[in-house]
Length: 467
Ligand code: URP
Ligand code: ZN
Ligand code: ZN
Ligand code: ZN
Image (spheres, protein in one colour):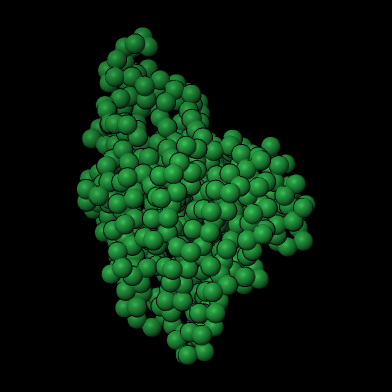
């Protein structure tokens, strides 16, 4: 009651009636349209006076307990979804990771077993196709019927997840037949591996050189190649974790032609830079080793990302939450950056970090809701159950207080299973007050009321965001 409900098209004072797990009505404050003022008839009233009321955040890109880089991401489905709830995210889409020799159907079943009964909030899965072959391509159709409607391929990481152009072409043909979304990690991994080996051989082994050996040219080139293969096959293409201005320009041109190409970016690319990584003392820069890498602010990538967020050519903001501790994990790469597990933890901070764009006047309130909630729900086939405050939708609701000021601090504002924060010291205006997941209050005024197992698997439709 009493809040300003924000959607992709505007903000207005409205009360929301929730019954069980579902939103049943939006009413003007004080309305007696349902017989009496809701404040006198409801079992529970959440006072949202002076605050924004937004759809629960949808983070379309997370890696809970992902086996990667010789270790496993440090958040489990339990700890990671709890941290997400703290930060106002009520749905994640995580990645099932196919190992070579494994059937994608078996991978998915394994990931179901990892997540079932553990999650505090609802979750879906994308499928990483680690090995494109006849069996995997056949399996993709089965996965679509089971609600896994998006498939990630890698142009990076030769010898691990890497697919060559022929395999990409075949997977795209299958995705096009199914109407499924092809997600691409667009970096030229073959060329990158040469630059990495040369850098290490020269003695340039500090974390910063992770970034310099993955230059923007190799993101632009791979993005362009993926776009052309998608254009040829008709597959809808979603380019994950875009960080280079030039890659975005490729995507904007393709979209201008009417092609179904979408860009995702992450808060780390909007706020952090290679210059800061260079300035970090000792091995500290390892906390920002991720791929695509942080890019040089001086090259104008961040400005371009914010610009394309405004114009709509960046469709979604996700976290690519892939946390590793310094101890025993990131530290494996002391003396050789190529052994640092790639990834940043941030599932907890996305709604806050993106609200800073609103607070600073870089994006509108409506755009904040769009890129963090509604667009990912539509992109991944969960709309209108997720991503919107409307009758019939799941009651995933966040009361966001624009007042107050905190700075992110490990041990202070941190719930992720990590031994550091990649966002240490970041100044944040506003905060999450109350979070509802399917009608249940899971976070309220700084205390946690959620539980493992409340979160359910979301069987997704095909993308609802195609042009
Ligand atoms: O560095 C990253 N992005 N780690 C997670 C795996 C991926 O490529 O998304
Ligand atoms: Zn990736
Ligand atoms: Zn990722
Ligand atoms: Zn407050």
